[in-house]
Length: 309
Image (cartoon, rainbow, N blue to C red; front, top):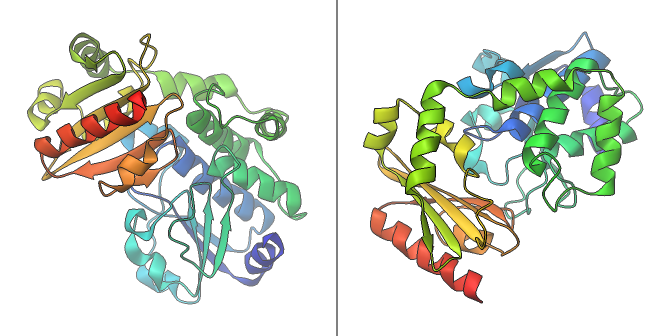
């Protein structure tokens, strides 16, 4: 599989890289890190990264404006996206060859080449693994900064169970490039005053049900009051995660006609619940979509049941 990917990188003059909607550090880190690595190896090629912008992560980089005509005869790579419905920019279909790079369960095996490894912490770590195996790819300070960000984001600063010895070895390779890791942390964890105010509200108002399940509901009018977007609120999903006794917690965020559900747990498998409500993800970190506040109540009951079991 890696050899096939290497051949395609050599073959195509134009390479366009996508990732999922509402990007997190791993989505952007793997996408932009891979772009930098390929462009460094092949300065004569056209290498682009596309998708909607995420202002809170703008320090990682900006997206390219690519006309439809560039997709003709192009190689398209989609990073960190388990299913096609979540790919940012539907033009991924217009390329000649499609590669899927991901670390989520391969529930929708789309693409001409599928490289999915659920044993790595993140797609950013998967990109580092590619560099280890493909002799003409090399890390730069810029790509290391981006990939480090993706790994840190998906491992919770190396606290989550998905952090392995291989994760640490690959992270060491990034650090050896000499990039400024402090700059990354300063940018990632800085908070605007409005976000601090919202976090204070959350800490005062979240519920704990039967001592096991934490619940926070953020209706649209509340986000408007604090002048915070639904996507910005995702940065606070773990704000009460360390409360003693919590086995799982969920953020419900109203956005338009839907309610986005961010579900997390310490070790209880919760992605099965997400799948039942238009979502999916990792066993202990998943997302779903509800279409009424009543449906969010059903999700909470299911969470409580699996935590009790």
